[in-house]
Amino acid sequence: MMRLTKSVIAAVIGLSVAAGSVAYADAMTDAIKYRESMMEVTGYNFKKMAAMVKKEMPFDKAEFLKMAETVHYMSTLTADGFPKGSDELAGPTHAKAEIWSKPEEFKKDIADFQKASEALVVAAKTGDMSAIGPKFKETAGSCKQCHDSFRSKSE
Image (cartoon, rainbow, N blue to C red; front, side, top):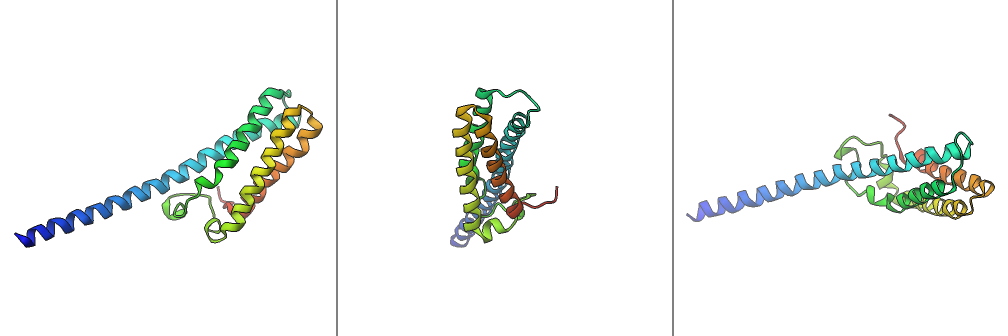
């Protein structure tokens, strides 16, 4: 009876560990989906703002401000999308291993994005395209810098 009890306990512990591993893997897969969604939202807003900055579509101050605020908000969530363990072992991702091997550089790029996007919001509130244009370019540059350093080029 004692041997059976020990076997049952061992099996329960084993299943708990396995379930925990599956839950962890699911969480890392979800982290990849989360960050991809954030990038989609950011990209969507960037494209529309770029069209306004390039005068490919009419400038709408309220709409531009809303998009700039959305991009800035996404910048504040960026780090949350890259928990340790959400690399290529968790699933298909364009995130380079340097995100986790060079965390201070990655954090700096995120901070630059946050600062630039916040300045874009301030400029957007003015409605003055001569103020908005350079801040938009700076924000786009901060995205490019991070992507150049920490995103795989393969598509």
